[in-house]
Image (tube, rainbow, N blue to C red; front, top):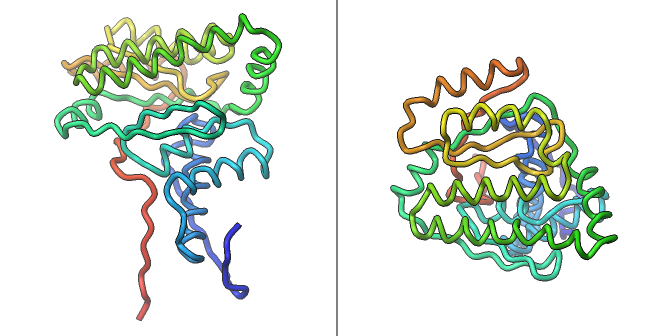
Length: 259
C-alpha cells in the first residue's frame, strides 16, 4: 500500500487508557496512526480522508471485520464532525467549528463509563446487517438514527447542550429497536442510575452488547458528578469511569532528526 525503503525496520509503541473492546474506536485510531506514519515515511501524499479510507480498507477487506466509517474519519480529522454517508463507504465530512466555551463546557459535562467487559462490534453488526438485508420494513428503523445525527449537529451549532443530550438519547433508543443486544443489561444499569440523577443525555457506544461503554452528558450543575459515579460503580465491580478529553486535532505526524 506504500512505497517504503526495502531495508526499513520499525518499532511501534502503542498505548491507550481505554480498555480493549471499550467501544471507543481504538482499533481505528491505531490503524489511522500507523498508516499515517507509513505514508509519511513513504511519499507523504495522502489526505486525512484518504488515510481514513485506507484504514477502513485494512479493517474490512484485509482483517475481515464489519466496520462503519465514523471511527476512522473521527481519528483522522479530530474535532467534532458531521459525517454524511450516501454510498458506503464513501462519505463527506463537515467539521463543526464551535466556540471554545461551548467545547470546554461539553468536555466538562461528559463522562465515559466502561462496562467491565470487551465486546465485538463486528459480530453484532453482522446480525443487524442480515436483518436489514431481509426486510425493507426493518430498514425504516435506521431513520431515527439519521435524524438523531442531524438533531445533534443542529443542537451543537446552536450551542444547546440540553438538546444535544436529547439526540444522544434518541440514538440509543433507536439502537434498541434495531437489535436488543445493542443496548445490553450492563449499559441499562448505568443508564438507570444516571437517569435517577437527572442527566441530560446518554449514549451506548459502538455496537453495545454485553460490554463496551456508555457516554453520559451531565447537566450544567455538575455537583452530583462524583456521587453519581460512586453509585454507578456500585452496580458492578468491573465498571470503570475513564477520564476523557475532546481531541481538537486528529492525526498528527512529525519527524525528529537524531543528532
